[in-house]
Length: 267
Image (cartoon, rainbow, N blue to C red; front, side, top):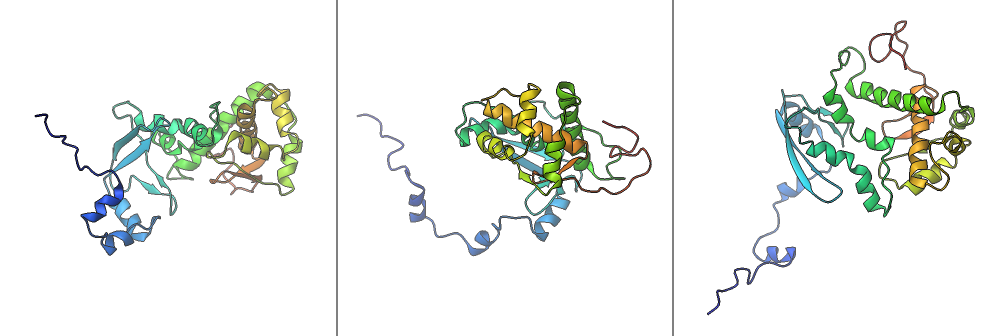
């Protein structure tokens, strides 16, 4: 007599669970609020540990612990946290999943070519602030502001190396006249490149200096974003934390020769 199948009668649909369980308690339903309220902020401020859950573009999940003194996690707004990173076991599971956002986007929007963009680097902002000792963080503007400045300076240095002296006046004038452009890491390269077409002179610049060949849409989107980020570094245009490029904004005055890094360092 063959042994009985141990999976006989196993659940095949989630709905079958409700045949054995009552509905969820009201208090359990009400606590799922979808944002960070004041009670959540107090709990986060007092917590010495949290767990970061991520998944890669292939769907591989990872849950990694993060710990520190209470208050080591910063609440940025009602939907975002800043979590410092440490060397740890150097497996880099979490960071590799973050970096793979370009791959994940390609899968979601059905793109064959995977090209990371500036928006993907901003997605790793918390990892950047955790890796760098920011001596002036408390005194001046905070770790995330300095990390954003590092991203912009790196973009500007890259652009200068390929196209130093190129005329970007038409691009700047578009934003000075009130033009704005929203760029996020979940938009397809085609959608981003389409938006960049509205900025006079932008795509011709990336073509002229060899940043992206004609017909390569993903590389064109990445190159255009690099140019805009360079202009943000030069204070010719601005970029909000949400990824919207617009006209330059006046910044608070600082002491002579002082920048975000607390000294005379310049790009």
